[in-house]
Length: 540
Image 1 (cartoon, helix red, strand yellow):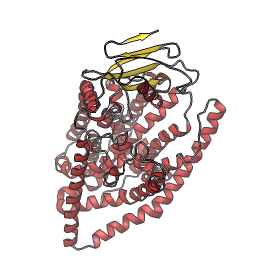
Image 2 (tube, one colour; image 1 turned 30 degrees about the vertical axis):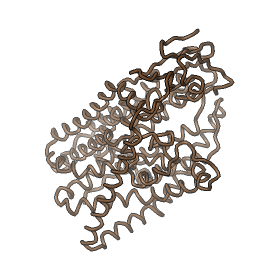
Image 3 (cartoon, one colour; image 1 turned 45 degrees about the vertical axis):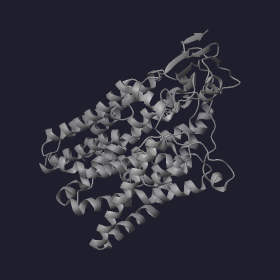
Image 4 (cartoon, helix red, strand yellow; image 1 turned 120 degrees about the vertical axis):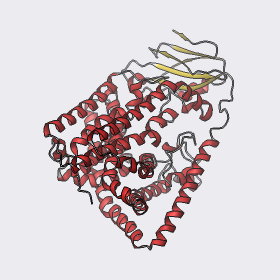
């Protein structure tokens, strides 16, 4: 059994808290501050990157040697242990939320039509944890946005499940790493591959957008964001994010090589590495808050901040934290932090359910902001307490029972279970792929003239939260016409940021064209935008 590294458990709580604070900021801190809006969003990106990279480290450290030495026994044991760790709490919370939540319950009672973002067809894929493995536009949104709170945050569980299935294939390669330079080259290679994917997306984003537009509709293309194919590729897709997991595996091999040689890096060197990591993460936060929001195209930074721009500095912090002598290792090994880290998965699943039960409105003054911060602190404390109760009262007992039942089964029963699970899961993945491909056939843009892709009023003030807020009104006024002039009107469009000079940006597509057209008015209150399938103009 590998020697435990308490700091890695402590940092799990840091990651879960970052995600919870990000989601809580979106719920409780909506107001006129653009910097606050951007910062809480970046916290969520950081938390997910820590989860993925840390997962690779922990999995390699705990299971790598056993899978290499005895794969036939160790691989099923590993997968059962992972299922026992993540599945019971997820499936219970998901089913409770699905059957009792206001998003679904009225439809089940037959009193209302299905809401946007709900499709019963995706329930088996969600329960099978493959919803991030494919892209589609179903019930108006991508699969990762289906259902309510637990259904949305469980996207990372689906992505992690892909990592677990890939891990046994990576293990034999990692076992060949026996020197420090080889481990460093492995880590740099994982970073380079994910950066290469980002560069490919940067260079091909025009083609990706056009494919998404034709295959899935206007919402799947930039400058929209939430339901876009590009967001799935660089953020949700396990095929891109798996390299952060591999990066963590390489860091674990580095730690194992050091331990095998009884080599301990100096505390000063480790502290410098951690400080460089913290500094790089701080720069990502600062630069994100000070750069203009992307529109119909994204820069390399816009793309990489969703994955490797944060994963690389996180790797430096993990290397330092894994050594007990480092400052990061000591801080993250605090007993209270390790205790909370044990319940981090439960906190990740339950926090958004609790946050959204608070009736919160926009804040406009500093006094209102203080009140919202107080409500936020109370909600976070309640979520943490609920997570601790769920972890020790349900998660741990369920894990022990599942693993105990598997160990108590005979060898023949285990083999039969593995075969049935393999066939069933392969069938589920095949069904998911077929379901996604059927929606991508043909050209969904059938109307002639203008097809509105996106309309955003005040995106320069509210950044992500305002994106697409005028799309419906713009589409209603202009779709199908050869030319259309649209003027923002405060009686029709809600003001997303009072007191801030707001831009109005639109994007549209013309059937038979090979590009998405875009235009913007810097002073939305006194300008009108003209959409045309013949020209691009602004009427001031």
